[in-house]
Amino acid sequence: MTRKERWQTLLDLLVERGELEVEPAAEALGVSAATVRRDLDQLAEQQLLVRTRGGAVPHGVSYELPLRYRTSRRAAEKRRISEAVAALIVPGEVIGLTGGTTTTEVARTLAGRADLAAPAGPAAGSPALTVVTNALNIAGELVIRPQFKIVLTGGVARPQSYELTGPLAQGVLGQLTVDTAVVGVDAFDPGDGAATRHEDEAAMNRLLCERARRVIIAADSSKLGVRAFARICATSAVDVLVTDTGLSNAGAEPFESAGVQVVRV
Image (tube, helix red, strand yellow):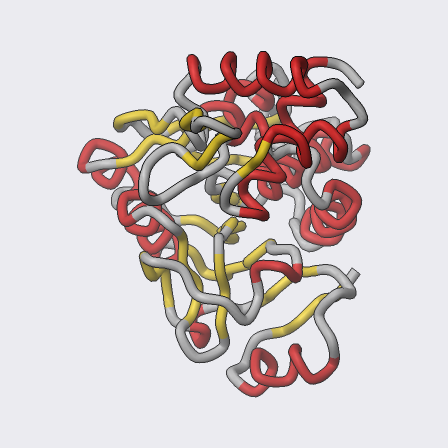
């Protein structure tokens, strides 16, 4: 196990358990207690956790694992979800992508679609897709694809999610019209709607949904039937939910009753 893999596993365990003790963590990773202590010290230096006498606790009251450490969590589900979402996108569309690990996978899948390798439409030079995003990492990955037109909002960058937020970002997004919005969420409950942990991200995602003709939520099943702090939109504002087969028939029924098409992959 590499140092990066150890760090990611330690951070995942911290999110799941709420705190870490050195000896159980060392046993879970199959390494020495000294290695875990050194790893925790280095993660604390990056302000990713707070060291305690016997281990570590999350950094701050509201803990959010930075995006770069979340990429491998439920990776297989996210790949299937991204492929299903990408299949719903029509060449020539203007699509909006919020930040997040699942939407990043959607962007990568779209970049690999053979029918999007060449410009679409009758006019020479028409983009295969126009992608509007407030996510710096997504824009960075897609901008090298000449068949895509990339529109990046301005705003203030959040280091945890690489998303641009605030009045500058909202000012740009408010002037645009999008065919399909692909939205990543921290929670989606049939009664409470879609939500995220941070109000700034929620405001951007809400505006993107309002500017779109079709709203697709891409979320693995662990995020369904739960609530988060900042609401994005009502369930009735969502057209399609793409998730994994961890969502049961009984779990899907409340979403479908609210008018949401549920796709499970």
